[in-house]
Image 1 (tube, rainbow, N blue to C red):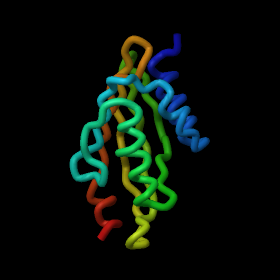
Image 2 (image 1 turned 90 degrees about the vertical axis):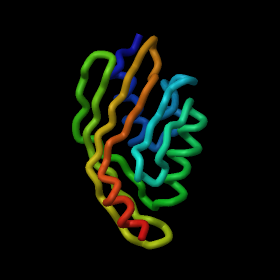
Image 3 (image 1 turned 120 degrees about the horizontal axis):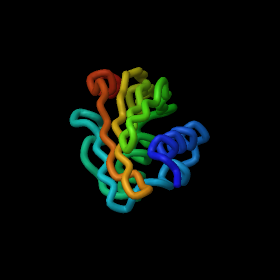
Length: 129
């Protein structure tokens, strides 16, 4: 069985390849995925289909070149912490941004059960004005 660290790393590796199926592969049907209040797709979404529609698809429609760049991945057993940067250019305004971000992951019973994002939402919002 893959460890929590292995699952989260596989998600980011798939992200680097632009492999959406790989990104969603280990997300449990009841996973609670939370995007921070103030972020363009703020809210909590349940399951891979909602995550795809309300997060990945929504960000792809709103931003050109939207990217998460992983700097560090910290192994804490069933919890994994990712530290990195978001960047992109808002399609309507043409303004770019770069923002620091932390992702907190929780894995249980061989699946990703929880994700929570912490980021500088002001940097993203400024690109949208």
